[in-house]
Structure formats: C-alpha cells, structure tokens
Image 1 (tube, rainbow, N blue to C red):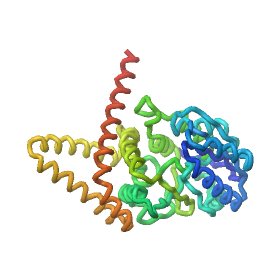
Image 2 (image 1 turned 60 degrees about the vertical axis):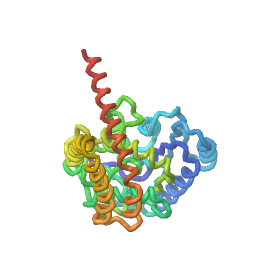
Image 3 (image 1 turned 135 degrees about the vertical axis):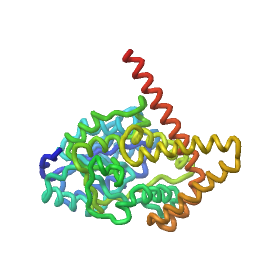
Length: 345
C-alpha cells in the first residue's frame, strides 16, 4: 500500500504513559522541550498517569501548572489503555509516543522535521534507541540481547525502512514512535491480542506489525533517543517473566524467523526435558551449553565487554524466568481461544 503524503511537521502531540516514575517524568519532559525548541515545534504534551501509587501525581500537578502539560489520570489499566486515553485527547495531526524513561536527544526532532519536509511519504518512524548501561548490568543484559536479535541494524546503524516481510530483522518499539495521529489511532483501535488481559499484551510488536503491513516503518540513528532501564534484581526478575509472556503474544501465529525459532525452542525444551528425566546429566549439559552460548553470541554480534559480562552473569537467571513466561503465554492464549470458541457455539 502506497503511503499518503503527510502534513508538514510544525506542531507535535506527545503522549507519555507513566506509572510510578516520579524521578523520571520531569527529566523526560525537559529534554523533550529542549529538542522541540531546537526544531521550532509547538508541543501538545499529554501525560497519562496509569494509576501511580508513588509521588508521580504530585509531580504531574506541578508540571501542569508550570509547563502547560495536560495530565490525564486513570485507574491502572496498562500501557496500551494509557496510550489510547492520551491519543483520544491529542490535538495535533502528528503524534510522538514516548515512554517516561526515554530521553530525546537535542537534535532529533529538528532532524525528523527536515526529513519529513523532504520526504512527506515517509509517515512512520521508530526511534533509534541507545541504552544507558553505565553502572546497570541489567540494562546491559537487555542491550546485549538487542545486539543478537537485530544485528543487521545494530552492526551498522543507518537510514533504513522495513515492511511486513522484513519486520523481524530490525529493532522497533513504541517507546519512541512517530506517525500521523490517524494512522496511530487506527493501529491502537484495531489492536488484537491473543490474551484477554491487555496488561500482558505485546502492544509493541503486534501494533507495529499491523502498521508495517500498510506502511513502511523508517529508522535512523539521526532520530535518536536514550533509554534508562530500571535497575535492581527484583525488577529484572519481573521483566524477564513478563517479556516471555509478551513474546508469545507478539510472535505466536505470525510468519517469520522469530516464530520458527520460538517453535524450535519449545520443541527442543520438550525433548531436553524428556531426556533429563532419564539422564539428568544430559539436561545439565544442555542448560550449561545455553548459558555459555548467550554471552558468546552477544560478543560475536558486536556487544560491548559490559554487555557480554552481564549476559554471562544473568543468563542463568533469565532463561528459566523467560521460559516460564513463555509457558504462561501459551496457556493464556489457549484459554482465550477456548473461551472465544465457547462463545461462538
């Protein structure tokens, strides 16, 4: 499908979902204002507080009074619901989805403004994300996995675009996503998860796959952001388990190499488990091989020394948690499908 030329980027609505980020939301918005001023863009900022229980509401009240942002509050319903609420009140034809721990680099909005003026048919843009890993081995671990999965881009960052056919080969996400409001609304409203609980839905992969089926998605290191991941063992445990579940929602039933890898991994796990019952030493050797393989592949994929070290330390923790999350996802998908079939009878 050929994209329609977009309107010039003179003003920008920014929708930021937030949950318990009192220390980060102010920093995120200050960097946004600096980048918008450099680009000569008018901002319409909507921050959706998704049921925060810390000091975030007080911070938003102060920011609304001093900087003119609009704060929308809702009971905790998940990031997708928060974004939907923000899009419903966004005023401008262009919208940037931005997560509260994602910091826009000062020149990025000026670059994208000029890019859209020169190429108005390029209507969908994912931000290039650099992960801040200094002093945070958990962030370094996730950054290393990105190097494995999307090395086609990370080994040589450059201006690229991808559609549905190349979807699995490039990094993408909704933490810094720019496109016309109507296109984004269509993707959000048409979003369909394998699960009945949208808290667990893959609102990144499934939404963007739908967009990529209709418009090519563009990516460039000039449209740059920096992500500050959470630190701490407890957060890493929760995130590993959660990502296993969202991984299933994002890729099960979808064509491509990742789906094939998921099915192969599940088959291998079943076989390994069956063999382990009779020969425990084989199971131990299989797990040890995987633990060694991950940091090795991170290094071969261009990972930094810190990322390789983090992979070596955290892979033994990550694998069982992610695997448990995958199993949860498969069960949830099966239950949702059974429920849907029962309603149709």
